[in-house]
Each structure stands twice: as structure tokens, then as C-alpha cells.
Length: 343
Image 1 (cartoon, rainbow, N blue to C red):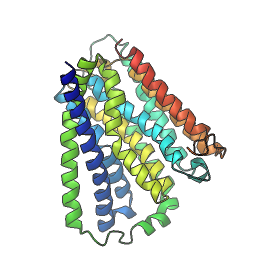
Image 2: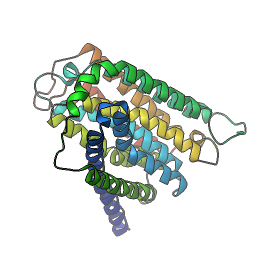
Image 3: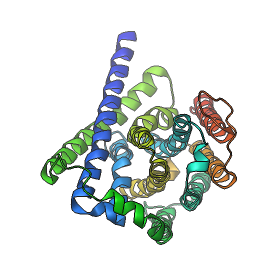
Image 4: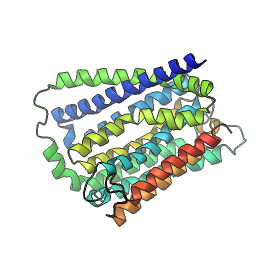
């Protein structure tokens, strides 16, 4: 039995390694493609980056539903990724010396964080509501799915209009041939290769999650939200660290908050491909706790962006009270899921 557990953990680690390395390369070569084609100077380039960093969540969710029949892992992966992305703010803050992250960041991120609260909160509300409905469904698609897609499109439009004038000068600087040593053909080939690796690992990941839940005695809600969500968020973590090294903190923040918006659209897509009945009617209501955790953490970030604290609680680590609060909510979410995930 112990050998079997070690084998499963080894397979889990291999998937994590592949997604972490290939996901990072995926983001890098997507940026090269955008630079070579001029997309980095348009909204299409920003959309390309957002979808790339969320590719593991999308592939893992589809695999969990179609191949592994594990809806709790599919939903847990998405909502857990939202919580994990917000916890990455703690990592980003710890990498900064001097001024607090929230004094350096643009307040324009408030809008994307607010849209995140609306979308994630709406999902949490529907998790609680859909599980209380006992009447038969006329379609397998929940009424919340078109509402999510519509709200996402409104959010993208509003963010584009809000950011267009503010980011135009920055984008011009970013589209001046930053990768002279690599051709568009090379970047495209490496992008596709990295995508295939991420997709392969993402397809296999839910099966490992189900096995882990069985051998460790954990519920799929806990496995999907904590373990698998952490792995599928590795590209976001890698991008955040890379951006911090060049001082592009606004880029890192926009990537994290934008990924959360796209994650909720992934839930809508999963609901469409889940043919039994509305997806949120087939999962544990405990996922609503993850949704509410993400809502509260998004609210804390908005407070930080408005209040702009500069007092550092731990000088070496570089945390302020905002980062400490985010880390505490992340730990609380994991603890609650561990305690009650099997109920």
C-alpha cells in the first residue's frame, strides 16, 4: 500500500513538473509570438496571454468531466485556482523591497478585481442555490452559464475601454522587437509543443487526483481545490516571479486578476460539456466556501489598492497587513476543505 502511494505521488510530481516547465515556456513563446506579429500592441495580445496561463485549468477541467467523471475535481480546480492566484499576491509582495506592492501598483486594477468579485460571488451563490433546487431540469446547461459569459464579455469590454489610453504608451515600448534571436516560426513551433505537453499533463492529472483521494482518504473537493488547483496555477506563479524580476509589477497583477476572470468562464464551458445536468448541481456545496474566500481576498486586494499601505510587518519577508491577510485566508480555506471536504 505504501509503495502504491509513493507511485501516485511520484506521478503527481511529474505532472507538476511538466506543467510548471511547459506552462512557463508556453507563456514565454506566446509573448514572443505577440511581439513578432504586433499583437502585443493590441487587446488580442492581452487575451492571448490570459488564455495561455489558464490553459491547464481548462484542459484539466475538461478531462475531469469527460474522462475521469470527477465534477468536484473540475470545479475545485477552477475555484481553487482563483484562491491560489490571489494568494500569489503574497509571494509577489515578498519579492519587493522598499515600498509596498500596493503603493507601486496602478489603481486601475481595482476594476478587474471588482469584476472578479461579481463573477466569483455569482458562482458561489449559484452553488448554494442550484443544490437546493429539486425540480427536474429542462436542459443540462444551468441558467447561470449564459449570465457568466455575458458578464465576462462586459468585463472585458469595460477593462479594454478603461485601460486603452493608460496602457498605450507602455505597450508601444513592449513591441519594439524584444526577441531578435528567435524567429516567428521557431516561437510558434515551441508554443505548440509546450501546449501539447501542458494538455497531456492536464488530461492525466484528474485521474491521479481521484487515486490520491482514494489512497489518502481525502475527498475530491479537497484534492481538486488544493493540490490540482495549485499545480494548474504554476504558470501564473512563474509569470509573476519573472515579471517581478524586471519590475513589471502591474503586468503580474493584471495577469493574476485576469486569469481569475477567465477561470470563471472555464466553469461555464465545463457546464456546457457536462451533459448529465447543470454542473453546479453535481458538486459539494463546500465549493461555495472557496468562492467566498476568493471574494473576500479580492476585496482585501481592493482595500490595499485604495488604502495603499506602506507599513511592513516583516522587513525581511516584505509582507504588509494585506499580504498577511491574503495568506491567512488561503490557509483557512485549505483547512476548512481538509476538515469538511468529505461531508
